[in-house]
Image 1 (tube, one colour):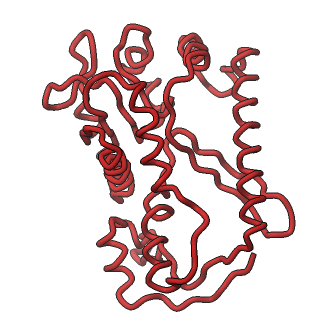
Image 2 (cartoon, one colour):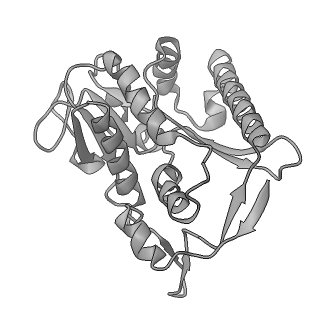
Length: 259
């Protein structure tokens, strides 16, 4: 692995914003901004490193699943501030293995040994647009002869196509919190909805605040039933809100991604 110094493209801010990254800069408390998207450097990997990272990431995923199973088998919910009433829905979800789409690993890696896990965000993972789209366009603009090691975009479309048979009839809804001010969540949801659309699914995008309960099921602001919903909204928030129990009760006809 090598870190290379690179020259930012002319007009890079306008370029990445036109591609959906409206949060290209990070505001500071003193009113200044620093770039969130940084084109002054990049990392170059050998193929052998990539193959090892893929294998080790799969191992980390298996370890995380094993840890989750331990929590469920030994009723360790209180250790994670999970309310007792949510234990049965969690056990039921683990047994049924409902559809799941993607997660994001944050790794520490210096090229000299195996990566170390900093975080596995398997509920509300962002950084998707930049990893799947923005960096690909940067690569084709600056290094057209090179390749990138991820195939996120293609795998998302393939995953939607593979899992569509498990969804109830009706469109797939994509929900985000419209209280988030950087638009990162909105653009992430918009991109995910586009991958589902490319996979042949009917999609709807809605704000969490616009989801209503009619006494039997959840509906969007147009009154359309929500049968399948990818939510960029954490479960710990939902469980603390009035409709959290309704979202998890067995008779509610909504499949939530991520489970």
